[in-house]
Amino acid sequence: MVSENKTDVIVIGAGPAGVSAAVTVARGGKKVILVERGSFAGSKNMYGGVIYGHAAEEIFPDYEQSAPIERYVSYHSYMLLDEEQSTTITYKNHKEKKNAFVAIRSKWDKWCVEQAIREGVYFVPDTLVNKLIVNDGKVVGIKTDLEEYFADVVIIADGVNSLLAQQIGLREEIKPKQTALGVKEVIKLPEEIINQRFGLNSEEGAACELVGGALSGMLALGFIYTNKNSISLGIGACLEDLKAKKIRPYELLEQLKAHPSVAALIEGGELIEYSAHLIPEGGYNAMPKLYTDGAMVVGDAAMLVNNVHFEGTNMAMISGKFAGETALEAFEKGDFSSNMLCLYRKKLENSFILKDLKTYRSVIDILSKRTSSFLGYYPQKVCEFFNIFTKADGIEKRGKFVKFTKDFFKNRSLAELFKDGISAIKLVFGVLR
Ligand SMILES: Cc1cc2nc3c(=O)[nH]c(=O)nc-3n(C[C@H](O)[C@H](O)[C@H](O)COP(=O)(O)OP(=O)(O)OC[C@H]3O[C@@H](n4cnc5c(N)ncnc54)[C@H](O)[C@@H]3O)c2cc1C
Image 1 (cartoon, rainbow, N blue to C red):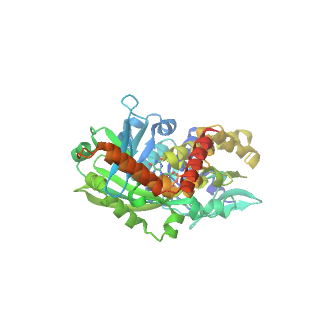
Image 2: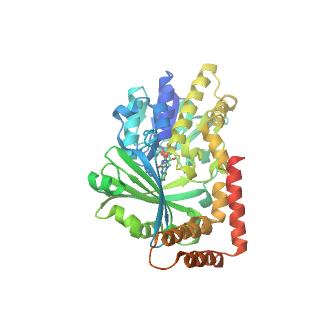
Image 3: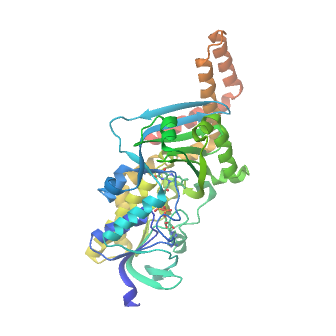
């Protein structure tokens, strides 16, 4: 072992999980190297747009003073689409304004790493970790193109594909069924136009989830988030569905953008960015082994994402913090084996992370079997219902409601409705049990 290349902890990947792990270790007085393949933190990263205040505050208590926050999310909307219509439910909280905020990852990740460096983290950009070094079954270091580095603990935070966790047998290659492909456009618009279109002031932001329309019948959702001077618009669609239906995600996004209710929000905007990234969808059932002798896996690499609530960054940050704390406790005991690092899993189990993932463990599976109903037929029917409910055209209402009800049952067999009902019950009881 080359002693000058030995440190206390190495963290691989400077996303939200990695930076949180590294800064926690540094605060505990241990030497930590944070290795990132990108030229700066955030240069390789993309997501929808929302960061959660509770997690940001837990890692960087004073973040609001200098973090690159675009807008605080004050409106949450759910837009159900059919071909030509939409029904939107909007929730606004006038009191609790800082639950979530919109941030651009290339700025947010960079800011987080700058804070971490100030607190003693040694940041190594432009460096791809090719391999983990394993001695007698214990992870003891990393191998990059140029050098080998050694540490008592290695924290693997390399994101959704996590080739490194695969290399040491902690997880398998991610399967299309457990993965969504996210594609996103950033569309530039003047701040006042965004404020006008979404009914916001300059501090406020909107988060809007889109169901149905072009995405009808697929395990897919759309999203719109307002930045200061731009809008992030994208979709996340199950890879298996995209493959089976031979649909290209950018075509799906184009169709979604053409919907009149969406087109009105982005009209006149200039496309300034297009990006794509995978999202882990397997949840609790697909989680890998989270630790081994000398190493822990955090964030997306450990599949810690709650897709129903669009929560990934908070799980990444808090899991990183737990792994950092566990590493510090391992130093106190002088034990870096699995017996000690299993504490990391216990911390996750006692937190919202594994509790929530357990609660939602069957949701994606149930939805994937009834997508044509829950993510196609019913959103369309809600729009049709409101079309009748709001129309004053001189034709009596009763006949319209009778026709709507007859059509509802004509287009959906009793067997299908029964299956939908059972699935809805399973969804509710699955969550409440
Ligand atoms: C389309 C889309 C929309 C999303 N929307 C939201 C949202 O609105 N809110 C939310 O909370 N979550 C959202 N998520 C999920 C969220 O982005 C992730 O859960 C979160 O980024 C995970 O953080 P991480 O640090 O684990 O991984 P990442 O952010 O992926 O970071 C991994 C880092 O490791 C680096 N790396 C990888 N391999 C190596 C290597 N071998 N050597 C060195 N460095 C390496 C990468 O360059 C990267 O910087 C979304 C995701 C997508 C794709």
